[in-house]
Each structure stands twice: as C-alpha cells, then as structure tokens.
Length: 577
Image (tube, rainbow, N blue to C red; front, side, top):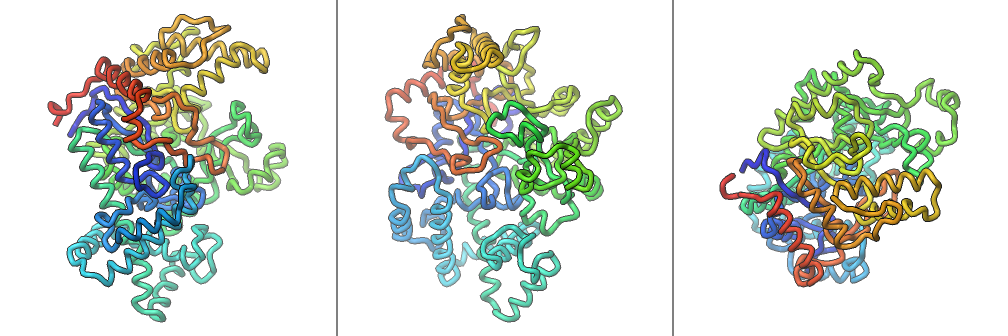
C-alpha cells in the first residue's frame, strides 16, 4: 500500500503504554493490534511508536543493545503465540506479578522482565522436547535468513549470561572480552559442555524468531486495515551493544554523541554548562561509506519489515554532531570544571562539533554534502517506506531545505515557529513536514499551556519568565485562532484543547501527530531528558481500550477527533491500495 503525499493524522502511542485485559504489566503486540483496529475505525492514518529494539539496563528505547534485535518485553505471552506455553503458565505469571504490578501507573521493568523471561524459558524447554515440527522448521529458516546479524547477537546475549546478565562488555571477564576471545570461549565451552551450550545460545535466536513472528503479524494486520505503523531509528546505538562489540571498526569509541549546552534545562546543571552527553559512540562514517553503508542498510532494511514510516531521531547527526571526549559516567567529575580544568583531564580535548562546525560557508557546504551522501543511502535502504527526520535543536539553515529536497519530512512545532513576531500559520507549513506540539521528550499539551499560563500571569516567576510565558501563550493562541488576554489567559480546558488540536490537524503538513496523552488532556510524561529514573519510558494509560470506548467523556474526545480528521485529513484507503 502506498499513501505517500496523502495528508494523514497520527497518534503517538509507545508500545509500553497500552493496557489490555490479561496483559503482564506492559503493553504488548496484542494490545497494539487492538489500537490498530481502533485507529482504522476512527480514521487515524498512522500509529507512531518509539524504538522497539532490545534495550539495556536503563530501559531506554534510545539506548539499544542491538540495531536489529527486538525487545522480548513486548511479546504477547499467549499459548497460541508462544509454542510450548500453557494457559496455566500465564495464570501463574499474573499471580506472581499481582495487582501492584498489573494495575500500576508505571511499568515495573524488573518484575515484568523476570516474569516474561521465566515464561519464555519454560516454553523453550517444552518446545525443544515437544512435537513442534512445523515451528522448528520455521525457526531453522529464520536462523538461516537472519544469520548476518542473528549469530553475533545470540552469541552476545549468551556471553551476557556468562557475565551475570551484564551487557557492559568492557567489564566482562578477560576470557571473552574481545570478539576473537569470545568466539574461542564459546567453542571451548561447547567442547566442554556439548549441546547444552548450543541450546543456551539458540534460546536467544528462538526468542527473536518469536519477536519477529509477532511483529510481522502486527504489520500484516495494519496493512489489511489501512493503518500505517511509524517506527523510530535512534541516531546512535549503545556503547554496550552487540554491534559495537563485534564491529568496533564501525565506531569511534573515544567520542560520544550528544547536544550542546541548553539553559532551558533548569533541572540539570550539567546540560546547562556542557550539554547532553548521550554516551553513544560516534560512527566512523568514512569506514561506513567505504563498505557501502552495509550496517545502515541492514538496520533500515529490518526496520521496514515492520514499519511503513520511520522517524530518524536527531537527523542533524547525519550532517554533524556535538561530541564529548568522555563517557557519561564522567559527567559528575566534569560538571564544575572550567574548560581549562577539563582539558587537563581529557588530554586537551573538549566537547565540540564532530567533525566540523557550521561557522564558515566552506564547513556548511561540506556538512551538507556529508549529510546528502549518508541520507541518500538511508533512502535507498528504505525502499517504499517513508522517512521523517527529527530536525529539532540547533538546526543549521541548510538542513531543512536539504531534507525537503530529499523528500524527508522535517518537524514543525507550532509555538516554536514565528515570523515577524507572529506564529507561522499552519497553512504556510511545507507539505513535506511533520507537525506536532510535542515529542516523547516534551511536556504534554495540557502541561505546556498551564506552565505558559502561570508564567504569563506572573505566578512566582521573574519578569523575563513572565514575558516568555506571554510570548508562548500568544504563539499558541494565534495558531489555534483564539482571541484571549495573554496577561490573563484561560485555564486549559476542552475548548482550548480542541482549538489547538483542530488547528494542528488543519495544517498543510503531510503528517500531523498528537500524543495519546494529549487526546485526553493528560499531564503524564514519557521521558525527562537528562534524568534517569522509574518515571522515564514507563507510563501506562490508566484504562484499557475497552474501558476507553465505554467512557462517555472519552467518547466525546474520540468523536471530536474523528470529526476533525474527516474535515481536514480524510483517508481513502481503498483507492490507495
């Protein structure tokens, strides 16, 4: 199905957020299938997810331990979908988790992870011993077809087990802390313990087979119902990933990607002084270009098996990226140092643009040319899938025109776009753009409006903050065509919400997306950049889809959403088959 250049409305719904009856404390593939059916019935053109690759200890979807492997935490643990699993196993799992996990506001990753791992190991033992001839043949085919990434990944996961579950390969025992030693260690263990070692490693291939099996089914349902799935490609990959461990030649392990200093992060002194240090190793772009961007082609190719559209996180990093000469573990050490003091601890190196800034025309032209070559490789790998670029932050003037020339839709945040002191009307947005009020890293619309409103009326803030609040409220009011007193703006309510959402859906952009939390005026966040804690990447909707559809107040919001989409972004799925 091709819907390119058709104006679509979408909803951001991270895979961990939806609830359904009998889930195990986190969103899963069956819950997403329920939401796909909802989207189809309400004329929602696409569902936007965050990355679904397997994560490390911090559970951040932007810090995956594999560029391809999917996170088993999203597996639906149903006997019909997991060969070897029994109904009694799922019942026991729910009893183990209890109401405190199953009904919690946030995902308890530790308990949910233990629970699902136990179920999978139980099912795997029965699978090996049982009569699953067709499924075993399907697994063998999967292993053969995916060998280019699956072999290294499954060995990496097996090595993690030998190291006590730690993905931090730079702290693994010396017996297997390099790729060559790791392979020798595996073969030595196989000679010593026989087929048991093979079974241990194959377990991880089996889990990935289940993951791809379920997600491919999700994609098939979405295609059948005319709903597009939108994925996400992080700009980096975890330092402690299978990719970095087995392909170190593709990465610069002395420099780490991030973003320059921003004073708006009041909660984080390090970001204010130094910037955001994400800890992802930089790419050796010259090496990648020499080998035809093989690593990227594989990463994108596997992604497009599941997603029709994908967002490239921090697409600015394809042109140049802000880099730190130290890993995030050293941030506390550097936070109070002067640049000269920091140099003394880093061998004379300081955070900088890698590998050239945009301060001269020559540099800008060179950075644009670099981005052009790299992004054309991405587009080629994407095939029929559509590419969106998250181009927020310090955006050089050449980026947006270049992205548009490639057909990559850049972001438009309404209250950030102004011209001659007034908001840019949505009718003036380029067609090749992605309009939204917020990403997963921002406050919800309700929170934004209220924070701007409180500043606008001068509630416990400085004069500069009051002026900023009034500016932001005016920008949002202008975009929503609201005549308000900016010195005493109204409290966020249903009318304010729908004037803003309707204006978003009416804009000229190819894509217009709202977070599921914005649909119901919620204030819960998905992530607070620069922080680590239980609140990040764990918010769950406080209702199931069935409960939502039975709630009269929520029905009112859904009806308004459908009416607005039909008015501004009607879909004709049949004619676009």
